[in-house]
Length: 524
Image (cartoon, rainbow, N blue to C red; front, top):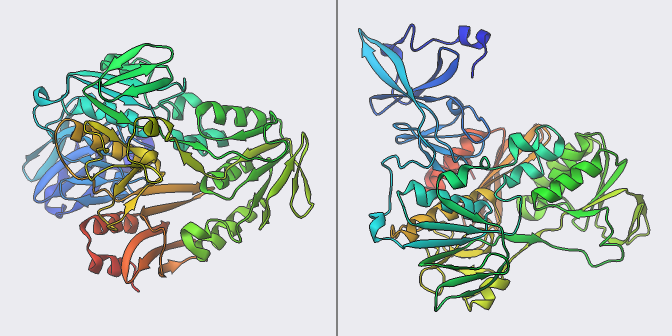
């Protein structure tokens, strides 16, 4: 909501209205209704009034991008319908509020606030009649993909049985915040970690079962658990996610050595950081560097040890790698590159060159591996992941896979890819849910992720495992730029810092396969 001072600076659309002659098509005008911020949008000759901020992390929608009858958030690419406020794309799960717009004597007035239930169908359902769908759906995994799938089933007016099974007592949680806002101490667990309040799933008739899956009988269509019995299904979604890679060196299992995947992991690191004087982060992955930034925010001395020549260069290129390294060094992080740990002791980490770094906390961030044991036992086709078709269906009919474990035919690159991104996992789950209900819509969303380092966020749209050229617009040195990753002249991905709308525009162009627009945004 707006403060009283902010409200004075903005037009009150309910009290005073706004002159419609000054509203151009494609305009987004911030204002308020009383003490609540509202965004008035004119698109294709129509006027819409919606909440001014994204329901994910509060990004200002006025700084975003209009695409048809939708608006996309500049921070994390959530998408909302202008007519009813529905959250059409993850990571936002809740709709924005909407108001009625009346035009009288050439002025637009905004009244009649509505805020629908996030799982109430809004008329944008894409699946056929739920009566033709399965009687029961079992989802194995309550991470980003699994939780989003369960919600989307209800949003598609599905009334059958939904069972979501996960042994992690902290799931579903907002995993990105575990290495960012929560770990840095900016936000409490209650404010930023739970995806939903405690009674949410019961309220929407989604059964959340805390149990370990022992096996799946695909011929009889039954999931067997170790603690909670058996669950029959007509359709099954595997969303088992990934697990951190572990070290295999002396001391890797000491109590002050942690990985970061779950809420329990982040809480343990956070509690230890309250008294730690020196931390060693092993690995210069995205999560390793985010942990470094979060712990520096707590004024803990941080060393980053990595075999890489330059952090993140293998994924983002040398230019961004140097920028990220210098940013962390400005905040006091000490790098030990082209090095690995050979031993961990109670008070230190020894490197291969003999250097001994004091450490009363060690965080291992050397990547993750997809959890494939269950899929393998079911006889699913595997190829460094669970192979799925464009509808996210596996080699066994009525069994789907989504998120970190799924390898799907990417419409943008024409290759089978597997991606370990939170937003991608959520969108996979949403798409799989619709296809379980018979929508038969190919998954075409461009993968997106963001990585926060102090006051800078890298936003990355697309997927480029290999590229032969990079083109830059803006200035990497000033930390305001976009980089296009290209192969054979084709744009595969765009990474941006402080050019949020350009990254949104690149996402639209990638999904439309509009190479002309991509080269306009980031010229070769």
